Image 1 (cartoon, one colour):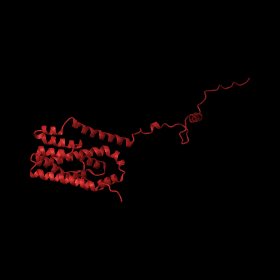
Image 2 (image 1 turned 180 degrees about the vertical axis):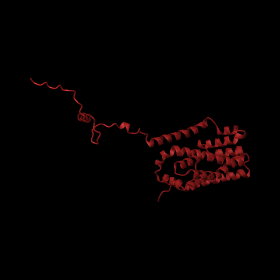
Image 3 (image 1 turned 45 degrees about the vertical axis):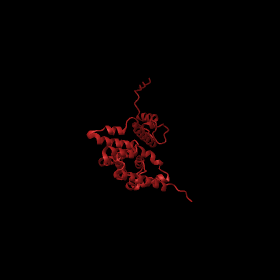
Image 4 (image 1 turned 90 degrees about the vertical axis):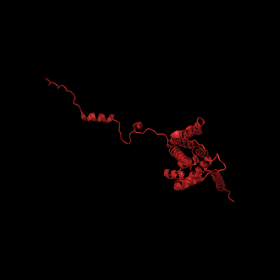
Length: 259
């Protein structure tokens, strides 16, 4: 009689087979793997182009200056100065003068107005202080909003030489610009802001350089009611001499043809 066959028990787990199956189903992470890589988890978010940001800031600068100039259609600095009375008269006059320089009002007219309102004694220091505040505001706006976008454009021979002089000889160059009667004040502010000149030499040269022209126009405005007075005649002569000096300087600086 044949012996009974043993009944097969439960199959034992085989670690080797499990490891091999796990290995066969797991994709390889080696350098030669063809599995796609998800770069969205590791790549940083794209940032705007630096030049585009610079152009946006330049557009903001143009908008701010245009708004300041356009606001003069809604209010008059002369009317504000005339209405200011009491202890706030000088601070209001100072703020109106500084804002006027940023809004491209001509400084000769502002200086003459200071002379009419405050006379020579107070008009000259107030006009110089207003010029300094306006220069600081313009420098801050130009340096922070416009310099990065306009610096790549400084490639011509003339512009490169101006930028080099302002950067290397800041105080002397700015002082000469301020002493030159024909140089527009706001144009000088932004030329310095777009260049490499440092702030403190720029401010010191501005305060020192605007004194002669400012004093001449303030005294002329203060003595305008008596055109025959020595003060008016002297200030008018100084203004005329500065205009002649500007004209001669511009004529000598004109481009000449090579023979």
